[in-house]
Amino acid sequence: MIKQPNWKRCKMANSHKRYFEVLNWASSFLDTHQKEPYIAEYLILERNFWTKTDLLGHYRQVMPISEITQLEADLELVLQDIPPQYIIGSCQFYGQRFKVTADTLIPRPETEELVQLCLQGNESSKALKVIDVGTGTGAIALSLKKQAPNWQVTAVDISDKALAVAEENGERLALDCRFLKSDLLTAVISEQFDVIISNPPYIGPDEWQEMDVSVRTYEPKLALFAEKEGLALYMRLAKEAKTVIKPTGKIYLEIGYRQGEAVKQIFKEAFPTKKVVVHQDLTGHDRMIEVC
Image 1: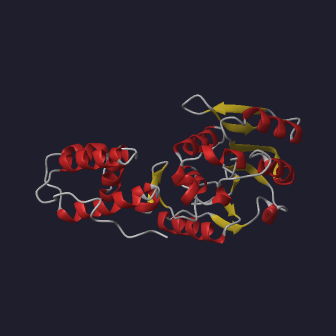
Image 2: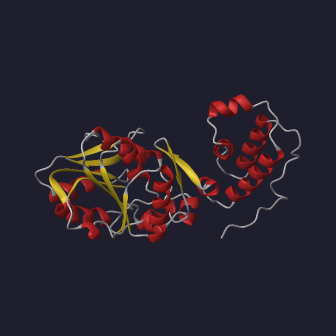
């Protein structure tokens, strides 16, 4: 439950303050409370739907009292370790804005790289049948549909609440995807797909203490954690994928940075005639598996 802001703790003399003054104050306030200072800029940008260039253009303008009051309220929620994306209620992913709630995992920049890998490896002009397993907000499925309108995209999730958010995102973005409740691929086990893509839960329970407190407290555990050192769902997915993937089909997976070889071995055993490749993210960490 989100608490009401404590105005005595987070309040500035807010009349006739320019944007750069408010930003400096807010960044220092967060730093003082051991929170990342960049969150202050993020909140201002997101509340105004601005780019950093937009903010620079407003730097010396007086910030409206209503915006300062909103920022003060937002900062109080940050002190409660609530992720800023949940505070805003949406976030950008692959050039589109997605609604996010506490029922959905917050889409990460690394997952944009998974979308890009899939788009690079498949022809957008073909009417491929694609399935996004564990869709959450629908970010992967809807991003693929936006970039490849000819693809027939299905998005599945075990969570009714997550599916409701994904469907809402699809309606708002006017993108035609099929949404189904499914425990991995069980609801479509009689179908055949050209592409399977997934960012499944892959954090092992032993990694709990390594997670940021905001992630541990507010993001859905169902979308984060898996048994067998985070490998359990890859094992299941490999087994089920053998039934639904076409002979020429491809699989794209996001993985934990320490799971490259383990997940590669799981899919090499499941698909001995296919090539299994581990791809690194922009920081050089193992992050994606391609089965082709």
